[in-house]
Amino acid sequence: MPQYFPPVANALAKWTVIGGLIFTILLITTLTVFARTTNNRVRVPVAQPIGFQHSLHAGELGLDCRYCHTSVEVSATASVPSTETCMTCHSQIRVGAPALQPVVASWEGEIPIRWNRVHDLADFVFFNHSAHINNGVGCSSCHGRVDEMDGIWKAKPMTMGWCLDCHRNPERFVRPRSEVFNMAYEPPANQRELGTELVEVYHIDTDKLPQCSTCHR
Image 1: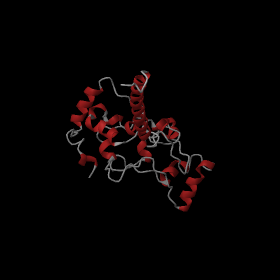
Image 2: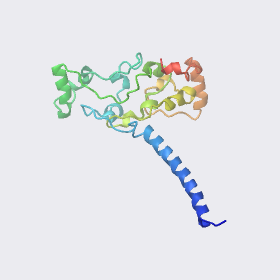
Image 3: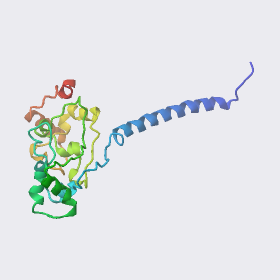
Image 4: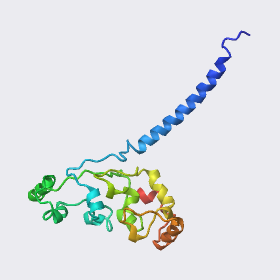
């Protein structure tokens, strides 16, 4: 039987298959990373109508999250600050500063500041801030080191898989309630032991957390 292909063709076929597998793996990995970061607007600054610096207010000045996000402990939503909240300070501090003119115009014209949303979960997802805050989930666990951000952006992907990592193993993430608003909090070496204890203290239903109906109602 005549040989139509040279011996090198076997090696070529083998490396074509191997190369194809490597390319497929790299493509899937790249698309996954893209979907969870850039395409999901992770670490992409969100422009706001006012150049509010979280690093100044929450970081340098040490303002508590609850001063602006007043309903975070008692409501599903954290709320965004009203003009009245801003003017509580800025009617006395940096009065007349050009950067604050939009705040003054909002105050004088009685027109609310239209902040641009940073975290926008799908309509079919139910999320309650107060349930997380009161059960030891720190702000920085989901929002990152906001006190170090000049502006604001999404720090975590907030995908279903990312949420389930916590819902399946809450003991890895919960902290003492006294540390919930501590942006610089670091889990201790005995986090697993401490977290297991806190899960019991907070009466967290670990069987219910991973169920579909917890977030999809």
